[in-house]
Amino acid sequence: MNKEREAENILILYTELAAYNIACFEKIVNEYNVNLHIVRMPVNDVAPFDFKLNTEKIFLYDISNFNLESLIGLYDQIKPKGIFCSGWIIKMYLDLCKIKRRECITILGFDTRWTGSARQIFGSLYARFVISPNFHFAFVPGNSQAVMAQKMGFKKDRIITGFYSTNVDFFNEVFVPEMDRSKVIVFTGRYANEKGLPELCSVFVDLKNAGELKDWKLWCIGKGPYKIPQHPDILDLGFKQPIELKEVMKKGGVFILPSTYEPWGVVVHEFAAAGFPMICSDKVGATEIFLQEGKNGFVFKGGDKSDLKDKLKKMCNLNAEKLKAMGSESFNLSKKITPLTWAHSFYKMIHNASQ
Image 1: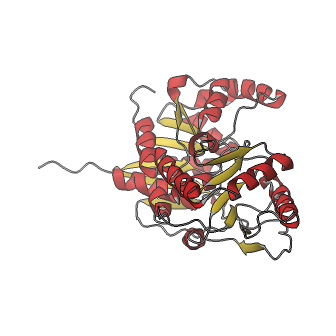
Image 2: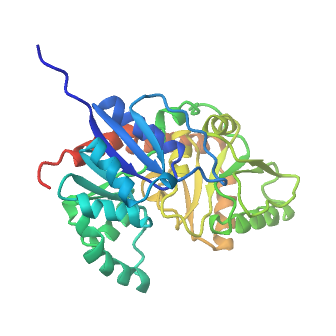
Image 3: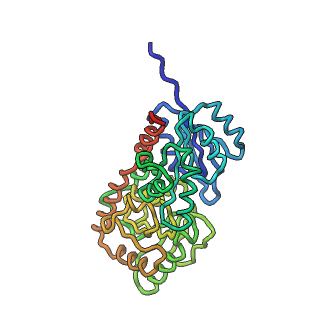
């Protein structure tokens, strides 16, 4: 009788987990015979996601309980097949990967886009000699991050895209192809200046005062230091857990993310999966996959209120059939990355034969 292969362990070194991470983690443990041991930071007050794990193969550890010595102890105890390190902010994580890089596959994940700034040029040179040699792969969301990985010294065949995925099946349940879009513009994200909220609210009020967007509302979902202005057509719904967000989505019409800084933006994937027409700034990394100009939405120049105003007017003046068609296109684009593609990519890296 063949004995069932013992489950492999994988060590995940993360910063702040979000609900979409859990969808990917649960997919890989369900698809493959692995256990995930995840060291992570406490839940952020601005995004207090409530995690409910549906598996006994994921083990969560609080970073506050570790120093480098005890982290090595955890590694030695579980003997992982691979280590995934999210970003380069936490020195203890980097140190462990440096120490153990010859014993297992090490993967660096990040979402920093290449901009060509002087700071990035010098930073990438530093990373080429100090950070990248300790990792076998870079796992990044999209092409602009892949450029960054190359600048850091990773070879093309060691750069894998698709690092972020929302729970596509979960949000696909919102989509009803023949449903008329409501006249509600939905923003979801942290209430902060870099999300473009001041510009969005200002432009929305200006258009209202000018007699434009007559029947349209703006709903804001999130939490943070920026105060949503009082206006009869602006509604602050506060932070929503994913199950609550899905209910709000059923009443929404158009998604907007006007960020002036947004390396990726998984929320774009969420609303694409829910079948929303969308408006995003050109600073949002996820537009490279989930927004096709004129097909399922519009891109405007980040921080440019005039361009934002033009795109808002253009979107809100479309007829019902065009908005439906855009929603269908978003739904289709959402399938390009899923928790399953994430799991396949991750597992393939972990089991790469040549370290």
